Every structure is written in C-alpha cells, then in structure tokens.
Amino acid sequence: MFGWLTGFLANDLAIDLGTSNTRIFAKGQGIVTNEPTVVAVARDHMGTRKVSAVGREAKEMLGRTPTGIEAIRPMRNGVIADFESVSAMLRLLIRTLHGNRGLSAPRTIVCVPVGVTEVEKRAVKEAVSTAGAREVFLVEEPMAAAMGADLPITEPSGNMVVDIGGGRTEVAVISLSGIVFANSVRVGGEKMDEAIVQYAKRRYNLLLGEQTAEEVKKRIGAASPTGTLEEMEVKGRDVVGGVPKSVVLNSDEVRDALSETVSTIVEAVRISLERTPPELAADIVDRGIVLAGGGALVKNMDVLLREETGLPVMIAHDPMNAVVRGIGSTLDKMDLLSEIAVV
Image (cartoon, rainbow, N blue to C red):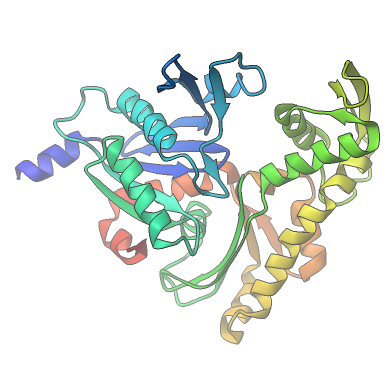
C-alpha cells in the first residue's frame, strides 16, 4: 500500500525528449512543460562546467554568447549527444514540476527513436534516472505518435504514421500494439533549417542564424507550390564583406531550398509502403497516412505526400504534441504500457 501511495504522490511523468523541443506530460494535469532542448553551459577559469540556463532562456542565447558561456543542443538526431547537459536539463525541469509534492521520485515514460541501440537506450534511462526518476520505461516515438493521433493501435489493422521531428523522420506501420515495419531517416525540421541557411549562403552570400532560418521555414516554407508567392526580409552577415546585410527571400526560393530534405521524407514513406505486408497495405489504402511532429505543419506537406502516394493523408490534431500526449495517455494504462514498452 505504501508503494502505491508514494507512486500516486510522486506525480508520474511522460517525457518527449526531442532534438528540438522537450515536452513533459504530468499524470492528471496534461502537458506541463514545452521547452526548447537547449542548454547554456558556463565554464569557470578551472574549466568546470555549470548549467546556467535551459529551455527558452538558453535558446535566446544561441549565437549570442560571450566567451565562457556556450549554448548547445544536447540532442542530435533524436539521441543524446551530451549526457551531462541532458541530465542537468531534465533535473531542473523535473525539480521545477515535482517540487515537494511527492514522497518519492516520479515513475517516468520516455520516447526513443525506432531502432535505437542498447547503448543509446541505456543512456536515456541513466539520464532520466540521474535527473530524479525512480523507474523509467521507454516507448518508441511512432507508437506514441499513433496513440496521440487516436489511431486504433490495438486492433488487428494497419495504421501508418509519419512522425516528422526535429532530428529525424520516422515512418511506421502499426498493428496489434506492435510496430510491423518502421523506417527512420535522419532528416527533420533542423535539416530544413540548415538547408535554408545553405541556400542563403550560396545564393546571396548571406550567413543566417539558425533561429532566423527556422522563422523563414515557419512563415514562408512549403513542401509544394501553394499558389501564392510570399516574401520575407531576412538579416544576417555578408560572407564576403563581413558586414550586416538583409535580403528578401520568397516562398519559391525557400521551397527550392527544402526540396532535397522533403524528397528524402517522401522516399522514406514510399519505401515503407513497398515493404508493408499486403493485408496491412489494404488497410492503409482505406485509412490513409497520419502525419505528426512539427514537420507536419510545413505548408503542403500533406498535399505533396497525397500526390506522391495516391493515398489519403491527414495531419494529426495538434501534431507537435502528439507524441507526448500519446505516451502521457499510458500513465493510466499500465497494461498497455507493458505491451508497447521496449526493453
């Protein structure tokens, strides 16, 4: 009984530890944290590292830090690249949420990409445990996205979900609470931002910051022609002269910049469809494909996939939060969690 009581008081958590953003779902409360996965690290004269800021505060420092402070993204392509920074970030976030409400540390569910190695799984578990969790379960991201999109994952029918995250895109066919086939490519929102940076540098000799590139993608980026030409003034540094400079980009240019990245995502979906068992493929013809993740919000991404596959393509409700809502729903369904958790 005491174990049950402490578990209840601990406020169990579900964490979507993404390359671009980290979201936390608290049992009985919903999404309580949605912060950029960025950590600002300060070094003293002895070289000792200390986390000085996390989340939005740290993201505002990207490209603007003085000597001795570094703003970093500790996740790369959906996996941990800087163990200490991830642990410190999670510790701060969990401590802020958990406070003194519970008698024990929270039980925690965390998302991982499909096909992560044993070393990568262990790194996630250790980082979350070090941050204060008493028990850690891992769930694959496409499964979580499918649950967040309200797909009937427990039924004996095929459901295809395409989760376009910050660091990678994952395509999965799900049936009977399991992933029948999955395809993961290291292309996502951040690659789109990089493509815009490279385009501006190549075409205009203009070096853009990553936050500017992200804003361009959100405002005038598109996967296929929208029928309307949009423009946006961007400011950066002239590569040749080294002085500040501004140019006007239009939506056709941005679409051209994104074309290679978008084509990689389309090809990943096409390969997944080719390798799906015939019975499940027949279900997908009827049910269609569901898009989740921040990349689903790029204009006409659904239209392009619909044209390329000939299948119905829908965007999940609140696609950016589909993954964390999906794993958050399992906090009340331990039987389902035991079926879908990876070991």
